Image (cartoon, rainbow, N blue to C red):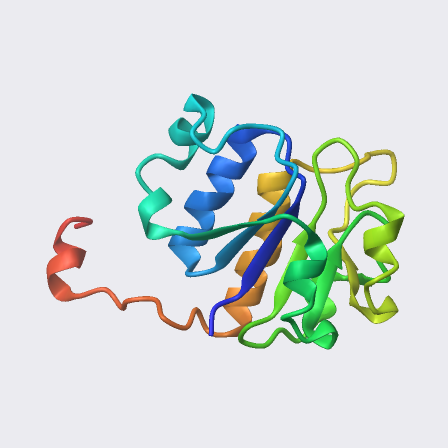
Length: 166
């Protein structure tokens, strides 16, 4: 079962486009929570996601509650500055969900209050910095999740594919 990435009210189309591409390449499902700060057909979104949109499993939801109602809350992780544990301290399982906030506000208190205290994760940063780019944050956490699953689903290189790199 693939991982789930949830973006709550994303604002920047280029970030979402990059995340669409990332999810296509890792097999994760992407859930976008309205309102979105852009139109899904916007040129910047298409440019950032390149031709991966048809390869990604993307769903748009009117509210976060519609996603959470269908999810085991014990396997939902909220990534936010000031989380209770480092994102690498979690033992991720197939089907886990990780939630990220918008570029401008992060995850608001009403979302954080729905999360189990031990499921609030953070990415370490230098103390004087506020945050890292949303698409970078998703990549850091999602690749750790996938790494822990030994990159399940990844095709192993064939001798023919290796010739290209020799």
